[in-house]
Length: 167
Image (cartoon, rainbow, N blue to C red):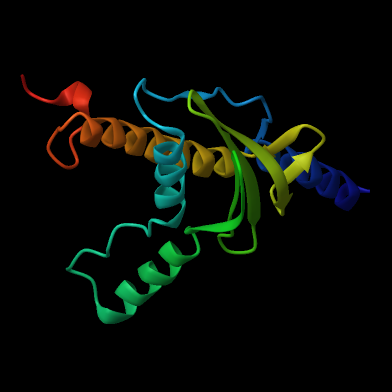
């Protein structure tokens, strides 16, 4: 009888701990495209960020550790899966997980929607919090790329968004 009580406590504890990494899936807020950025620039900004590799491994690591970091970074790279007018499908598959998003864009907004997941769903209407972290990081890069597109159009130095240009 005592073994059953311990087993029941372990099950409850495991359910509580594993549930901590799940968050509700909510509608994502769209990214506003800066005025003056063309539809072609929006598409180019999204594609460039989807295809951009992670930053290089810095020195100070052994060759074996550097290789492990490189392999881990590769698993966090986004892949362009499909491209249609106004829509791009992209996926990322770290370790045994898989996340596919639909990026819907126009000349005024960019919006991401979760299309498909594997090993990330924790139940109806919830997803592992890391999936949202990956999407947030991609959206942040897209937003920065849109700012750079505007800056390039307005003659700002390369890599400096127009809003940060010194006057």
